[in-house]
Length: 128
Image (cartoon, rainbow, N blue to C red):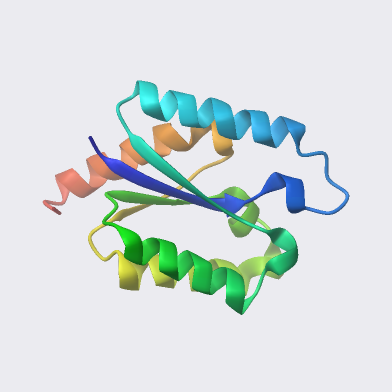
Protein backbone atom coordinates (compact mmCIF):
# COMPACT_ATOMS: atom_id res chain seq x y z
CA UNK A 1 0.00 0.00 0.00
CA UNK A 2 1.62 3.29 -1.07
CA UNK A 3 2.15 5.81 1.71
CA UNK A 4 1.23 9.44 1.14
CA UNK A 5 1.73 12.62 3.13
CA UNK A 6 -0.51 15.56 2.30
CA UNK A 7 0.79 18.94 3.50
CA UNK A 8 -1.60 21.86 3.59
CA UNK A 9 -3.20 24.50 5.74
CA UNK A 10 -5.69 23.69 8.45
CA UNK A 11 -8.74 25.48 6.99
CA UNK A 12 -9.97 26.30 10.50
CA UNK A 13 -6.95 28.58 11.04
CA UNK A 14 -7.26 30.84 8.00
CA UNK A 15 -8.66 34.23 9.06
CA UNK A 16 -11.78 35.51 7.33
CA UNK A 17 -12.36 32.18 5.63
CA UNK A 18 -15.25 29.71 5.94
CA UNK A 19 -13.49 26.38 6.49
CA UNK A 20 -16.47 24.04 6.14
CA UNK A 21 -16.24 23.42 2.38
CA UNK A 22 -12.48 22.84 2.47
CA UNK A 23 -12.71 20.61 5.55
CA UNK A 24 -15.40 18.54 3.78
CA UNK A 25 -13.23 18.31 0.64
CA UNK A 26 -10.26 17.16 2.74
CA UNK A 27 -12.43 14.42 4.27
CA UNK A 28 -13.74 13.42 0.85
CA UNK A 29 -10.20 13.31 -0.54
CA UNK A 30 -9.02 11.14 2.36
CA UNK A 31 -11.90 8.71 1.81
CA UNK A 32 -11.08 8.47 -1.90
CA UNK A 33 -7.39 7.87 -1.11
CA UNK A 34 -8.34 4.99 1.19
CA UNK A 35 -10.68 3.54 -1.45
CA UNK A 36 -7.80 3.64 -3.95
CA UNK A 37 -5.51 1.79 -1.56
CA UNK A 38 -3.40 4.75 -0.44
CA UNK A 39 -2.29 5.06 3.18
CA UNK A 40 -2.65 8.81 3.68
CA UNK A 41 -1.33 10.97 6.49
CA UNK A 42 -2.35 14.63 6.77
CA UNK A 43 -0.09 17.38 8.04
CA UNK A 44 -2.21 20.50 8.35
CA UNK A 45 -0.32 23.67 9.22
CA UNK A 46 -1.82 26.41 11.38
CA UNK A 47 -1.93 29.42 9.05
CA UNK A 48 -1.40 31.80 11.98
CA UNK A 49 1.78 29.95 12.98
CA UNK A 50 3.34 30.04 9.52
CA UNK A 51 7.10 30.48 9.82
CA UNK A 52 10.08 28.61 11.21
CA UNK A 53 8.00 26.61 13.70
CA UNK A 54 5.64 25.41 10.95
CA UNK A 55 8.57 24.45 8.71
CA UNK A 56 10.20 22.61 11.61
CA UNK A 57 6.95 20.73 12.15
CA UNK A 58 6.85 19.73 8.49
CA UNK A 59 10.49 18.63 8.66
CA UNK A 60 9.79 16.57 11.78
CA UNK A 61 6.84 14.89 10.05
CA UNK A 62 8.96 14.08 7.00
CA UNK A 63 11.55 12.41 9.25
CA UNK A 64 9.04 10.10 10.97
CA UNK A 65 8.54 7.58 8.18
CA UNK A 66 9.19 6.95 4.52
CA UNK A 67 6.55 8.19 2.09
CA UNK A 68 6.05 7.08 -1.49
CA UNK A 69 4.52 10.43 -2.38
CA UNK A 70 4.18 13.85 -0.76
CA UNK A 71 1.44 16.25 -1.84
CA UNK A 72 1.96 19.98 -1.38
CA UNK A 73 -1.49 21.52 -1.25
CA UNK A 74 -2.75 24.46 -3.23
CA UNK A 75 -3.09 26.80 -0.26
CA UNK A 76 0.67 26.76 0.13
CA UNK A 77 1.40 26.76 -3.58
CA UNK A 78 -1.10 29.17 -5.14
CA UNK A 79 -0.59 32.33 -3.11
CA UNK A 80 2.18 34.55 -4.52
CA UNK A 81 2.96 35.95 -1.06
CA UNK A 82 3.75 32.39 0.09
CA UNK A 83 6.21 31.60 -2.71
CA UNK A 84 9.14 31.44 -0.28
CA UNK A 85 7.22 29.07 2.01
CA UNK A 86 6.29 26.90 -0.98
CA UNK A 87 9.95 26.74 -2.04
CA UNK A 88 11.03 25.80 1.49
CA UNK A 89 8.41 23.05 1.73
CA UNK A 90 9.39 21.55 -1.65
CA UNK A 91 13.06 21.62 -0.66
CA UNK A 92 12.29 19.92 2.67
CA UNK A 93 10.47 17.16 0.81
CA UNK A 94 13.34 16.82 -1.66
CA UNK A 95 16.01 16.69 1.06
CA UNK A 96 14.19 14.57 3.64
CA UNK A 97 12.23 12.23 1.34
CA UNK A 98 14.50 11.99 -1.72
CA UNK A 99 12.79 8.86 -3.08
CA UNK A 100 9.26 10.22 -2.72
CA UNK A 101 7.30 11.43 -5.69
CA UNK A 102 6.04 14.99 -5.26
CA UNK A 103 2.49 15.81 -6.29
CA UNK A 104 0.44 18.99 -6.44
CA UNK A 105 -3.33 19.11 -6.42
CA UNK A 106 -5.90 21.58 -7.67
CA UNK A 107 -7.88 21.09 -4.45
CA UNK A 108 -8.19 18.66 -1.56
CA UNK A 109 -10.69 16.42 -3.32
CA UNK A 110 -8.35 15.49 -6.22
CA UNK A 111 -5.15 14.76 -4.27
CA UNK A 112 -5.47 10.99 -4.78
CA UNK A 113 -5.65 11.39 -8.58
CA UNK A 114 -2.47 13.44 -8.60
CA UNK A 115 -0.75 10.99 -6.26
CA UNK A 116 -1.50 8.12 -8.63
CA UNK A 117 -0.14 10.14 -11.57
CA UNK A 118 3.04 11.03 -9.67
CA UNK A 119 3.57 7.42 -8.58
CA UNK A 120 3.13 6.26 -12.17
CA UNK A 121 5.68 8.83 -13.37
CA UNK A 122 8.09 7.64 -10.69
CA UNK A 123 7.58 4.03 -11.81
CA UNK A 124 8.11 4.95 -15.48
CA UNK A 125 11.39 6.59 -14.54
CA UNK A 126 12.52 3.45 -12.70
CA UNK A 127 12.56 5.14 -9.30
CA UNK A 128 12.11 2.98 -6.21
